Length: 128
Image (cartoon, rainbow, N blue to C red; front, side, top):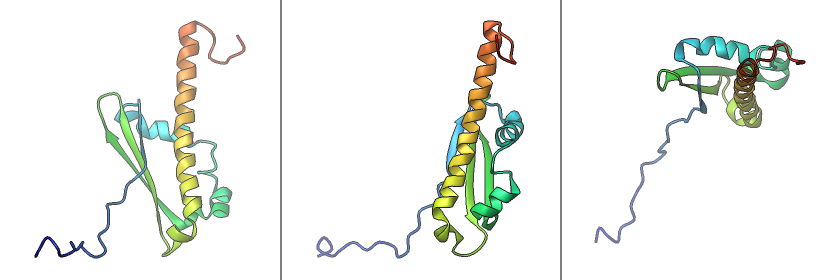
């Protein structure tokens, strides 16, 4: 008879919140400086852009987890400070999270370009 009874799942079972993350080839002790350089000049630090996008309604959570000696996982999430902000501004929150990771990738690309230029013997300032 137990095989015929429907299986009941726990009510309101909640999955753990997944924080968006990216592994970067930067040692854990250099990551805070790397993030500062990546975000410099972006709309994520501009107070007027934050006001226009409703970013002030979110609390940014940033965590650095060492993967090995040369790589670090950067986890970033934005949790609503105001009830309902996650729902009402869902697409904006995702946009801001995407912008954060794009800024990280741009900084990685800039560093790779600098490394490539110095390895080729050309000047870092460009133009050669």
